[in-house]
Length: 228
Image (cartoon, rainbow, N blue to C red; front, side, top):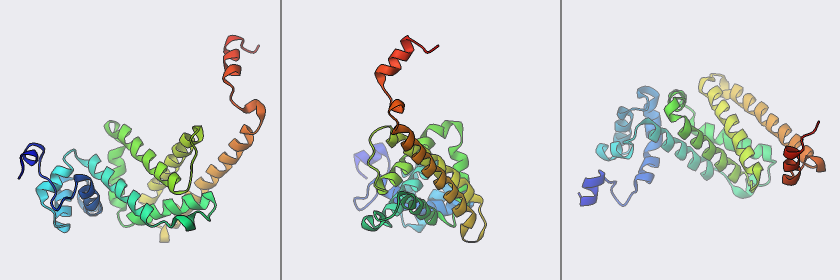
């Protein structure tokens, strides 16, 4: 073992980075977490299944459950991207693009609903709330980018915030949905996506009206001379 490895901990073999190792172990950890939670035992089982040195695996997730969950989410991001044909998805309406991307994510974690429930409980803890929000935002951003969104104004932020909320709520339904083919989850997702589309249409209509376009000069004028 090198001096660097002794100082910083074990290192993966064959030139593999800790980041790629985390991605490789993430689905195995999630599977183990169905029974053992997001725990050191889940890491150990994943290491055995992936033929990885358990000490190296433990070091890769040395900061605990949130590191495991973050790696799992990153893994789902990669699965979602790998399963999309950019040319094909570009032919779909925006609503269907987002729907397909969300369903691809759900398909990737089907059978691991118990691990998902435990992950959401951990992410809901006050000390993890900030990181959980960042993870949700990142997944929403990944979906919008794959859907072809190029907005750089405030729409960039509102779209991601709304989708992150819809996706989070859909995951909650998915985790406890025992209907055949997850039909209840799909119906819930469809209703929420319809709501997004209605909101975006209403917003676009409102912003086309000149008096509703934001003006810094008008805003400052109203601060100085408020309406009676």
